[in-house]
Each structure stands twice: as structure tokens, then as C-alpha cells.
Length: 156
Image 1 (cartoon, helix red, strand yellow):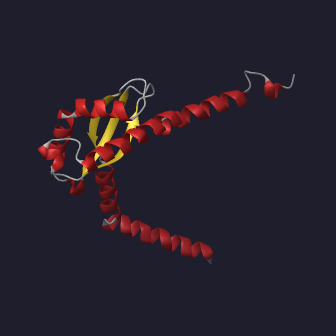
Image 2 (image 1 turned 180 degrees about the vertical axis):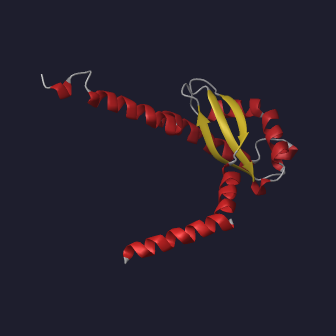
Image 3 (image 1 turned 90 degrees about the vertical axis):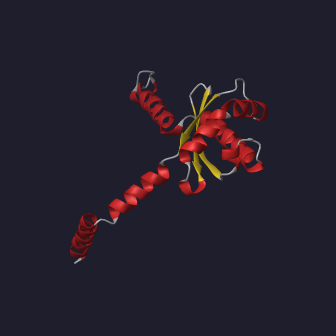
């Protein structure tokens, strides 16, 4: 038998390892699909005003991402109030209504189990702003200008 087709051969180990790495990058296809279904349904609930809470009704809330646990029993829902104002109040209001949200998600998204709902603030915008500020600092600008000059000299 050719060594390439033996079960202990590196080809099989690489395939398993790569699959594991894909798992860590954002979850399996199933996790991503279910997370997107829940995200879409929650966004629709928010836009229709289905969550009757004065704080939620007073804010435009975006739902950029929903991450599912591997067993699909926990949904971590990332939210951000438009303009980034009253983040704590909005998060508290959503937490107060998580039982209702869980019931509606279970009813509208066909899942074996209604996932536990966890709301978190989406901090990607803050992180992007922090990186943007760093890129505009004089030290980084100087280094970028110096790097451009080095590349110009390489072309000659």
C-alpha cells in the first residue's frame, strides 16, 4: 500500500488540523448559519419594535454579530446603539428582556433547543478608532514616510 494512503500519514493529520483551525476562526458552518439566522431575527424584532422597553424603543440598535457555542446552546449577541450613546442602559434593557428574546428566537428560528442569550457590546468600532489614532501619530507617520523612501530607493 502506498504510504500516502495510510491513516497515520501526515496528509490526514493536516486535513484534521486545518479543519480545527477553521473551527476556531469563527465557528463551524452550522454555528455561523444559526448565528446569522438569530442575528437577522433579532434585528427584525428591534426594527418592528417587538421588544417593549422604553430604553430599547428610544434607541436604534445594530446587531453586527451573533456567535454560537459549538453545541448551539449559547448565543452571544453583540449589539451597539447607534452613535454609541447610552451603551450600559441599552445593554441592561436588553438583559431585562432576554427571556422574551429567547422565547421569540426559539419560536421563529427552528432549533432543537432555545439557546441561552448573552448580550455584549460590540467594541470593534472602538478598536478600529484606536488603531486609526495610532496610525495618525507623528511617530508612525515618520516611520511610514521613511518606509516609502526606502522602497523608492529599491526601485532605482
